[in-house]
Amino acid sequence: MTYTRALRNPSILETAPNFVSNRADYNLAAGLMSLSEPFPVLLIIREIDGIKLLMVFLGMSAVSIGIGCAVGFSTHNTDLGVGIASGMIGLLAILQFICMCISS
Image 1 (cartoon, helix red, strand yellow):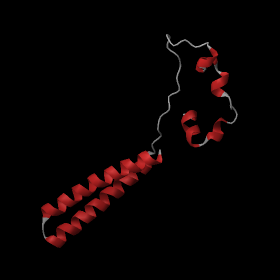
Image 2: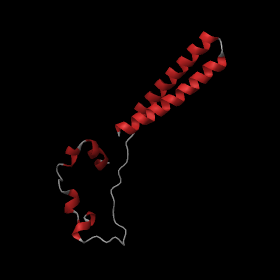
Image 3: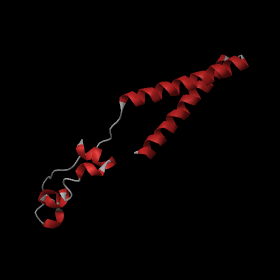
Image 4: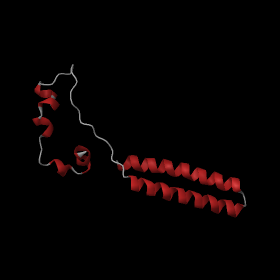
């Protein structure tokens, strides 16, 4: 997890400035590493804050349902209101995915 945090805050690894070059098992140029054998790798994962994700989901749902209800009441058409709410949830989910990809 330290390596994942270091992607956003490189100062975390300032105490080890030559981490990769000082480790022969990560340095292919040193000639000590064989490509025919398995070798250790660094696994970098994305951290997701569950509370923020829940808040975005709840906010997105509230906005979609609110717009759907407003359209349904103003047109006196339940089908249209449900359709608009469903469409809004789909569009906002796509927007949320794009924002998540851009911010990472």
